[in-house]
Image 1 (cartoon, rainbow, N blue to C red):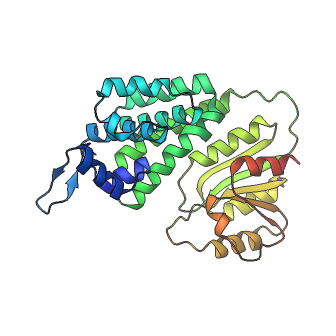
Image 2: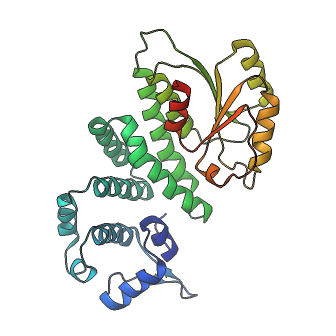
Length: 291
């Protein structure tokens, strides 16, 4: 993708479209091209520049100052920011730009470097999940091409699989958790991260993966008798009813404790069946299992 709308800039930077227009008018910040129907379009270079400027503005620099600085000097300013969150946000921005330019080598090199310094768990929490959230915003607006998304998600997936395989579990397993995503749900990265954290805490994981028919989960659960069953709710397919999803899990796995994670669960207000545990995040679910 090499053309971006003002809504794309808003979604990726967090700066409202109204503010972007004011900055353009007042400071000649960007010079978008216009379509035959007078719609603004921005280039990939515009996006890179705007992400750098919006980051610096967030951490105290005035727009009137930033518009007078070269892009190279903007990069130097970013490197002087002492806030941990600023470094994380810059890393997410770098992944975004490399994804849209289809710079597969650069994306993987940058991500590997970050993981080597910060570790896989911190990398997932601090830059990979925020990156995926930005991608979700674009996907919902139908502004994300499938090739971009698949290429970069596969790189992230490979990093997690390597991290899982490198874990050494020499001590006896404390508990067993059966992990899966239901049919038609293919978003595996969060599920792999759950597997990584569970294994890290000495928990045996029976990993069924994505798009698993319910009858298969029931059969394996009956045979293996795990301490917990773990899954995630991701509103797949769109407009899936969360209450029906939870009720179905409760009925089909009556003899098990089923843990469900999703950020969307904060909006869930109905009565929760006794054998269902709702958790907002993967670390929260792992802490519950470890009790």
